[in-house]
Length: 293
Image (cartoon, rainbow, N blue to C red; front, side):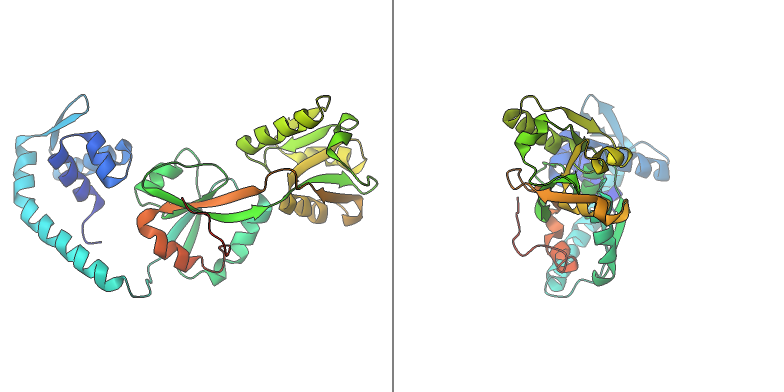
């Protein structure tokens, strides 16, 4: 609240003398700590630590700074605790930043359309390779994604859950999984994440070993095959509606839900310390039943 992240990293690392231990205490990976120490050193104009393998020892100037600043740091830390308790019962007005990882267009639009109903929330695109680091460094307070993120400082809630279905030609009726031996099945990466694609692929080949499965980046280029009845697509129900209503004449395509496939879930991961804020800000967008970790 009152103490900068750079200074907090310096104090903890100076006390623990280990990047690994400092990472565990601060609930961040080693990269943000190293980066913040480098920023602080650049601002001061001298080295704070001498580094040997993963051990960090204060330099003479670093030790002088530590000794001089610790009384102030301790007092300000106590004030943070006091004021945090005073604010805990209040309606927090500060804004939260939420990242979104490669969401399909329908879910993305659904979120953006509800943006006006979520006070003090900002949205940004988030790269999967950087999301965890950004969360732990408090650059974002939450991220919405299909994939699994596992870290002791991060919790999750079920943000969205929907059925998986077949996108079909209007001429095809009563389609079943066993019919895949007659028609190629197209699985688009822009509608289902890699882990779910593996699940779907395994289930298809278990039920119908002779099925021809085609995995593509974007199903838009293959809609002509589906419209003509020469192939079938598998995707979330929201994506089926998206393609049925936006990319073709509504009468050319149909879809049928297959409840034998597991529900396709989207999660919101957040810093545990931000749980109350996230639930407050996204109250209208979260499902009634919450799947927490």
